[in-house]
Length: 513
Image (cartoon, rainbow, N blue to C red; front, side):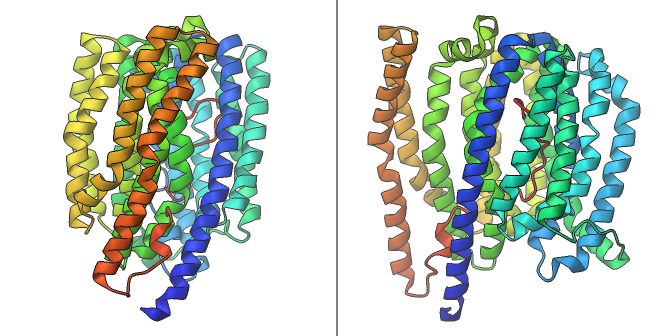
């Protein structure tokens, strides 16, 4: 074990450096998308146009999950020289994404009609060109993730953002409506593909090895199935809202979902860009993996809970303040979607951990259970009420069905539920205290800007008093565990927050579901 110490320390250094770059990247991109979204929603687009875009984006996200058959995860996970199998991976990705786009092009009118927005057909056909671009960029992007080169990834994402936002804003101001998003997404992905090719030279090289292809498909198909189910779970609510309640209601729901995704995307994506690679390095050491996962989950919960509570408790005034009074109906779903956001963060980190330890079949079963349970619940919820009822149904399934299933899978992978509860108890307690303070002060002080600022400061202070000791608690628990099992415990590597390797989302401005 002594000989492994330098490797563990080196891994910890790489993970910490990659996490810092990933955090900077995510924060800058999200703030830029946030500002762009405010301009578009307040001054250019109405709920109907936003709903049309939401239909196209929802379909694209589901298709991206199965775009390259899961084989590009091998670029991050497999050992050995990546150049040896990268050409076969690229060929498989290009072939599958091209066929998938052709199928979508033919089916676009029926899909758009089924989701309640026939006018989304053209937008869908243009936006889903990102499928082909994504299939080509996955190998160089996967190499950047494998080697923890998040600094280079930040440059690529910045270029993507500047181009996609410029195109989107320019076309939207000329009256292109939802089509402006589609054109912006395609333009940004073209730039991202070129940037990835430059940042990871030599990775856009086609080739074919039948033996490698079979091995890649055996590795990737279960992951592609699990990813497809996961994205179907995340987007089932939007599909059902559009089909049952119409695309105007979908516009309000998508806005609420976007606001709920602010903390989820900023914090979760920061971790997930390095977590899969980090967990993969620790997969052969169950104790180190357990420690790393517990610490990562505790850190994510501590960072995310206050943002989720703040947006949920002050949903109405915040929606009106940021987007305008006509978007206030979106606030009905926001508190429930913030609770769902917390569940999604834990589920995504668990997904990465289970993939790293090779429990792909468990993931497939859990995602299938989630989808099969969720769809009828959401259909009943949409018919019984509005967007708030749909969001509440989503939370109910996540808490009552999915969370226990993930805990069982983690326990079989050597990660005890008790350790996870220990690192989450203080953030949850702090969140409850913060929510009570926010609701009480909002009733007393009102919804003015100054009152909201004062309310938020007091609520965050209350959270801090309860939750800040969580970091000390985690460190103390892990230190006691290491002492109890002897000096062979690994120091640095397990402690870092170790994402889905390559981004499965096109960088569309303002709205990324």
